[in-house]
Length: 102
Image (tube, rainbow, N blue to C red; front, side):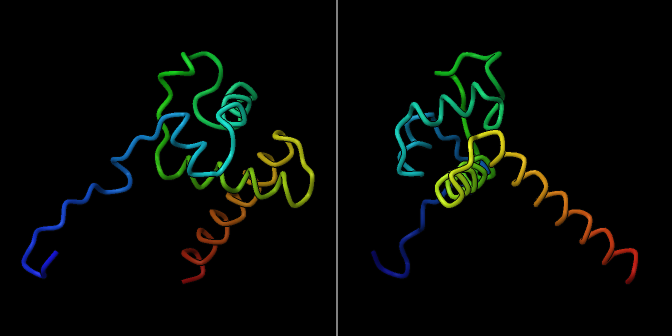
């Protein structure tokens, strides 16, 4: 490809991954993704058809975070999700504090 060739790219937020694609991106089996959907810690929960679930970049980051916590600390999916949620809340509160201080 030369410098003059157009680049065909899709913004990451517009990409919607299937269960199988998310599993591949995390190097896990699709059953891992389905188990986390059903546990309510990833995606929309078990009230929807699993095969129709689509994941965005934030879901991919969350899935990788869950996997890392589970592997590193031998945590179950609920504990890993709680740790991620608490970390997100700390980041939001620190950002808000910076705004109020500035």
